[in-house]
Structures are given as structure tokens and as C-alpha cells.
Image 1 (cartoon, rainbow, N blue to C red):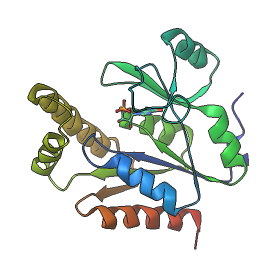
Image 2 (cartoon, helix red, strand yellow):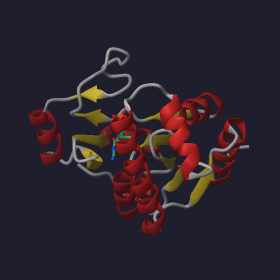
Image 3 (tube, rainbow, N blue to C red):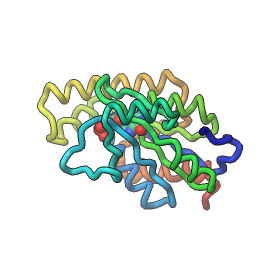
Image 4 (cartoon, helix red, strand yellow):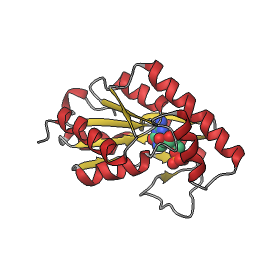
Length: 197
Ligand code: 5GP
């Protein structure tokens, strides 16, 4: 059952950005500095050895994911990079918002656009690299992928940025040039919207 949006007093913040932009580090820091609830997404992608089920993601089978969709169990969901499905479980987010809490979703632009439609009061922030060259250098510097995978991530990152800019769904674009400045800028935007002192 979908809640009546007028009962949702908290602030829903969406943070999106391409891979290699420092999104995960920034979101982790924001979480530590502000009293926020972080939504744990569901995904059909396989778990890596570094991840914990229920903490990093709820790792679901295709069937379990489809049945969540059928029961309207997601606030938004999308197939990311044409590979795996990702979705925000509806119930915990709506329960936290009904209690007046601040909830952060780290999701892609397709998901951000769905949230913009269904929850027009949500705050949507997109993190950008200072330049495409810097993004490419950072993707290479992570040492995780071979050059072919890096070029693929780079192409995906560029299209994610273009989609975010053309969607007009995002309230703010924050450039991650200096990490600390980007973190504080995002915290300030959220504090301002949430009237948090
Ligand atoms: P990864 O597999 O590297 O953890 O995440 C891949 C992409 O999926 C990231 O861009 C991330 O923001 C996005 N993502 C993670 N959870 C969700 C979700 O619940 N919904 C949507 N739409 N995207 C998500």
C-alpha cells in the first residue's frame, strides 16, 4: 500500500552521480555528519566478497525482485547499465519519512527521475567530476578494471551526466573537485532543505 504523501514529513534526498566521481565516499561522510537514514537498495546483481547482504544491498533473485515489483514494493526501480535491476524498498523509506526523518537514496538518474515524479518535494543532488579528463584519470586510478572496462564505465558516466542535466529533475549539481568542499556543500544543501541547524 502506498502511503498518503501528506503524511510524509521527513526529507527525502536523492544522491546520484557517475561511477568514479567519489559518490560512495561522499555519501558515507554525509551519513556520518548528519543524522540520516540510509536506504538499503535491493538488487539482482551478484554480491561481491566485500559486501554484506542486508547492509550494502538486499541481494535478490530475479523472481524475488519481480514479485516486489508486482506488489508495488519499490518506490522506484530501474535496470542499470542494461545489466541488473536495482530498486528502493518502499516500506522502510515511507516509515522513516512518516517519522519526520531524513532519508538518503543513492540511486541512478533513471531512479531519480521516477522519484521526482512520485515525490515532487524530494531533494535531488547530482555529483559531477570537475572535468571528463579528471573522471577518466580517477577511473584508471582505482585499479579495479582493465582499459576496456574503464572505457565502458567512462562512456556510461558521460551519458549519466548528460541524462541528469537534460532531465531537469535535479535541484543541485555539486562538483567534486575537492572532496571536503563537496561533502560540506552537500551537507549544507540538505541542512537548508531540512531546516537542520
Ligand atoms: P553498484 O552495482 O556499483 O553498487 O551500483 C551501480 C549503480 O546502481 C550506481 O549508479 C547506483 O547509484 C545505482 N543504484 C544503486 N541502488 C539503486 C536503486 O535502488 N535504484 C536505482 N535506480 N539505482 C540504484
